[in-house]
Image (tube, rainbow, N blue to C red; front, side, top):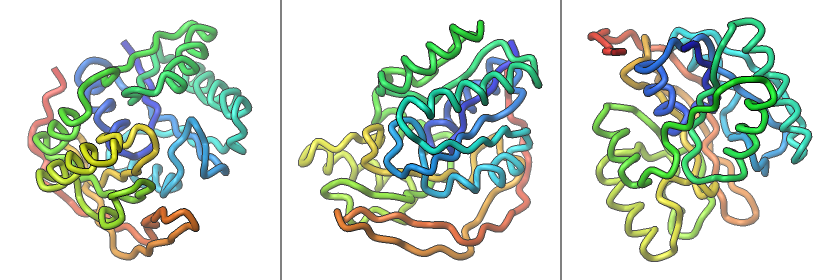
Length: 234
């Protein structure tokens, strides 16, 4: 099966890509750059760096802009998926959706219209288990945005065992979604087992909004060569 992966550069789309590489022939990534920071569909912090991530992974990427106006962004996504089908002859679209029925249902509707299968490898999985798997697999993921009570000191942290312990406490106290599925926090993947090269943040700055949210914006990335052990795609 030939697939295209909807790609934000965050932990969920990268974990979905990890599974897709093991179970299919991934032909390309698809990224929508939304002008609306409050988009219901698309991740926005550092999204313009998706191309650098794709280069580090070694996959082609389709990047398209969208104003991010609710249902209009769905039409923009449909055009991007249609382009992937035409250019790369894909049979299916892979998403990193975990719990958002809003996202999942709309992507499935597009796929059905275009005659494509929609694959959601993370759907309804335990969210703390997803974080544990990311750590176990050796993903390097940084928190690039925090928008919920109890997470004021989380921006800029890496997802590791200590992070999982701390986010569990925040969940128990404030009911914050532990995977950030409700927009409580955003992430950026610097390395994973399938990256051919790793990324390193050389320069960044933090912006704060009026509601107390914080966003770590990456100003400069560098590429690090890495030992390429066998990535088993069987």
